[in-house]
Length: 231
Figure 1 (cartoon, rainbow, N blue to C red):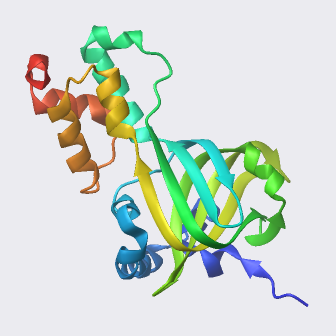
Figure 2 (figure 1 turned 180 degrees about the vertical axis):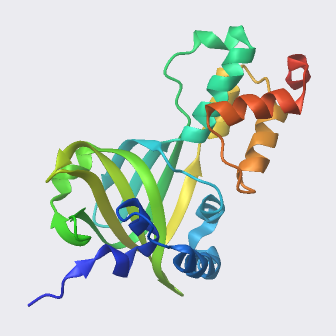
């Protein structure tokens, strides 16, 4: 008989989403240590553990026996760009702007999907549900050693599955990196303007600052009162 798996045994930093007043502070401290131990394996994904990819829409998920690609649309940068468009009407000609980045796992060992029930018991789901995954919520390193990393991702589904829209993905691989395409798109959408603004946004986000639409407006206003400064 297989041993039952529970969310709090695998990804305890996710539990407060499901249980009110659940203190995850000790787990966050332990997770920070695991992230630092995994720095070499994480490659350029390392810096995204000190910012946030929370609420990033999922553009696509592709895989074979050796790799897994998860392409996201950068929510924070989209919010920041929407705020900038309020300051510069010339940018409003672009609709449905995307700022993609791709999480790539190579030398894939395994990846699985799980449903999370009311008791936080996780049960396997078919990979057919990959097509219904809509939004990335959180991610946590479960374990790491010299040549293997195990990461849990919590996603939001387009439709409820057994009264829940949450789905857990657990990925085990030997190599992980991120293909960052955001700056290239930013320069395209702004016609190579606002590089100074972008660089300052990026600097702040990787120091741990969170940007939504409102905080982006304040950041742009505080950075300078003269919009032409960025050009």
